[in-house]
Image 1 (cartoon, rainbow, N blue to C red):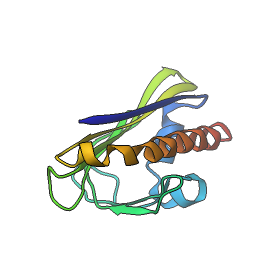
Image 2 (cartoon, rainbow, N blue to C red):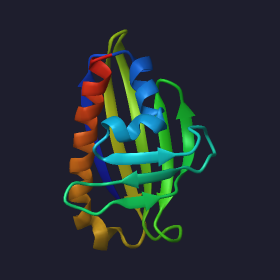
Image 3 (cartoon, rainbow, N blue to C red):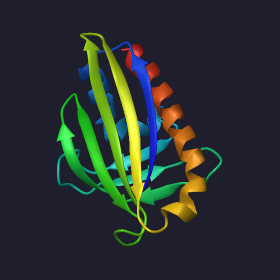
Amino acid sequence: MKEIYTEIEINASALVVWNIVTDFDNFPKWNPFIREISGTPQKGSMIQVVMKPPNSSAMTFKPTILEYKPEEKLRWLGKLWIPKLFDGEHNFIIKKIDENKVIFIQKENFSGVLVPILSGLLKNTEKGFEMMNRALKEEAEKL
């Protein structure tokens, strides 16, 4: 198993941050990493996600939303080809510090038989998380 973990402090309410990360239609306008998400943000639904890590080609996944807790957490599970080969459990977590400040955590746990072979490719993914976090901060703080 391999984990990528990033976090950023955002001077905005949990509601503002939540509304941005669940407004899939607007991702192309502000998000340099997750370029597109289509589908309904609700537990059990399958969505389509287009990610473009820096210095890499875009990748399209069709994960299933496992957890949807307004203003707290959005978690989905994506699989490469077949389950247990190379699975990624992606999390957006919002930890409220006070009414107008949160910690936004973006992390992904990778598991499956191909993780040792493909883990070197995940460096660009971590950079993509960091780029998205900074863009989210900028988007949330201007509202």
